[in-house]
View (cartoon, rainbow, N blue to C red):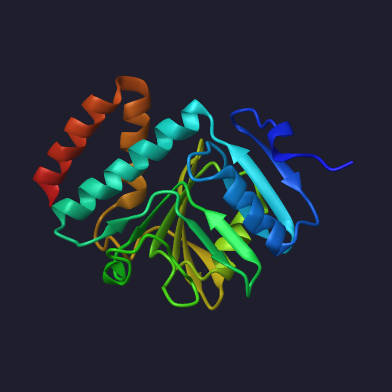
Length: 212
């Protein structure tokens, strides 16, 4: 018996793993689900993960993404924010959809593009994941050669830099030299959760005015 996609229900904050999915089947699933779906997809060597974000997940994602955008604007750094764009490589049988991502050093490579082809275009300079629940996802980014990956969960922010083909934890971000990223993200995301986004954003703008 073949299960149809519409029969699969993923509750917010949970994920479903489907095994033995060919690349052609994965491409078909992407097309059937469309761009307006709520779920995030991850594909690695025949294993497809479908995850539906929770409300807490979405709040954290929006706040971290907003803080990054404000920092880049204040530092006068050109960038392109591509949100949850699907990055995939049939050659490496890998695909991933970040919670949000940024082209910074390579921003000019994606200006005006509606689709990203990793056989031609570079991967994002910075990808951000909120509460990664699958080790497969971590490998996706490594195999797709994303140079910097941020992981944010209840323990706070973790910065991972790709070095010699493997991710290494770092206390600093090369995209924000001289900026205490770990402390800033942790402080103001928590402030947004406890005191509200508007107050956190105003205080973050004041911090940038005083320190940048």
